[in-house]
Length: 344
Image 1 (spheres, rainbow, N blue to C red):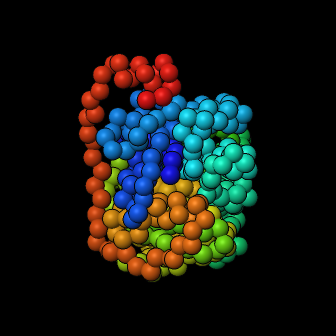
Image 2 (cartoon, rainbow, N blue to C red; image 1 turned 90 degrees about the vertical axis):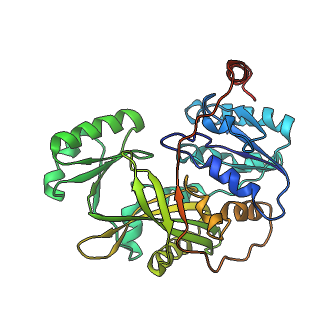
């Protein structure tokens, strides 16, 4: 098989592409090429050994669907792609809209529908959780500066201020909230999510749905180290039936088709779990799943290729991941190949 994967930006805000490729390479019986689709010629995954056999530059999502489709056609003519796995939130809507056109030229995907993406979006998550009996922090949507002045009537500080796609800030007063609002507005546009801040420990679940309401597998972990950007830099798998049950419920209600990450916080005051976010793709720590006994990325490949996949029934708790920095050395000539010709 020839499988193309995005999200090779293994930086301090890492994408899922590199760990996803590592997982697929270790899949039992896997044979094929893994090809990187990159947005920048300095994405670290390009230069890692035994990750992508070849890399191609593709246009940013803001360039429009037609440019993306034409570029994929060019790559498909050379590589005869069997499957594309997009890994970044900002590109998923575009690829979801291209699913039928890609299928018509022989490229499979295994993606959520537009409706499914909308249900779990940050601006709709509150309503979804409330209608399904899932604890969720109170939030309001800010579509203008005027909306910011409603904060005192809805929340006590601190609050979380979140962008529609990425980034979040903790604001301890109105001035900090306004600064965060302006940063996110310029970077990601409206709406900005203003969310009740709940103190407690953070937990995450990586899961896979088959599109029919079944949870193929899930592995929960607790963050052991969190960066100043809020990214988990270390974590440990744990046995947590409550998180597993909530994750199963979400997948069943949405009939989720693809990988996902569910972010939770356990309230220090009440001990209850609150669902903070549903990210519509595998997380950057997804390699922890096969390490604990559930190779969810490879299971996604098999589902995309039309195979029947039995749900995973267990995993190993107490498995720790610790992320690290590693200098990759290359020559300017190699970099120029990507920047000039768009492939490597």
